[in-house]
Image (cartoon, rainbow, N blue to C red; front, top):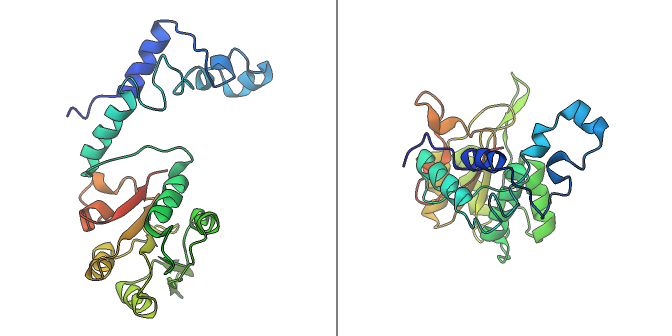
Length: 227
C-alpha cells in the first residue's frame, strides 16, 4: 500500500471542489447554521470539514470505502492485522476492549491502579470487578511507573480467574512498562493483555523509542491507542 495516500483528506477535498451539500447531520450545515460569533472565534473551516457522516463523503458503513481504506493504511503502518478508528479518542477504545475481554467474565479484570479515568468509567458501565495492580512509586521523582512484570505475576497468583490484564504504557508521566515481560506472563496463562497506549501513538515510527505493544506482543496484545 502507498503510505503517502490520504483517503479521507482526498475525499474531503473532492467534496469541497464539487460544491456538495449534505442533507444529513451535522446540523450546523457545514458552517451555514453556525452563529456568527462562533465563526468569528473558530473560523469556518472546522465546520466546513465536519462532513464525515454525510453521504457525499462517506457514511457510518464506509459505503465509499474512504474510511476502511484509511484504516487499512493505518494497520499496515503499525504492523497490525486490523485498525479501527473511533470517536471519543482512545477512551472509547479502552471501554470497548475492556468489555470485549471481561464483560461476561465473573473473575474480573487486572488493571493498573494508575489507569486512565476511561478505565474507571468502563468498569462502571460494564460491572466488571477490578483486581487492582499497584504501580511502582518513584520516591526520587515523586511519580508512579507502570507495574512491573513481577507485580503482574503476583496479581495473577492472587486472582487466577481474572479475564485479562490492563496496563497503561506510556504512563501520564511518560514512563513505559516492560510490555514484553508482562505479555509473556499473561500469555503463559492464555490470558489477553490490554495496553492503553493513548500516549504512545508515536512509538512505532522510530527505532530509538520504547517498544510499543504490537511489537512487544504482536499476536495477542490488544492495544487501545492514539488520542
